[in-house]
Image: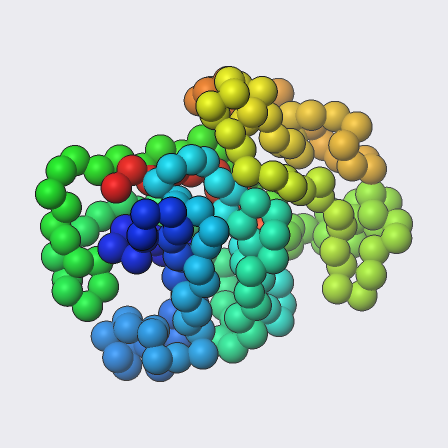
Length: 208
């Protein structure tokens, strides 16, 4: 999910949804002419407040959401191997993409990041899964409580309250709760997990 500040106007913005594919690699990692690229308009400017940006990566699609609202599905060239999560904030002056460089200092602030992932351990992925999600469907989707509104720091730390699966008990059947010394930003603990990714949620704001 990529944001270009030169796509923002006075009250609205846009998000670029991208899956890099063999076709985009042949074009110098330019995915704009492939089926793995979509520009979605937003009814707000991403640099005016916090919003939650999310993607669900499953076997046949990558689904994108903002503030819990579905945006778009990409079903071509869905990744089949695990990777890493990166947060980059940059401009290299490329007139075809990032534009710039900016005329003043720019900042990206991340409030929290969550990741939910599959396990390759047979006991966890089969036995434990069936015990914890007895009503699972063929796609093996166990419901995770979602964020249904934009986080709002302007009303204090309560406006940024969100659900952390590993730290708040009694939120899902049989969940494992960990004690952690994760850092806090705006009173909200941060949790970072590595592994084949199913769902990632990010709340951030970008200052133009």
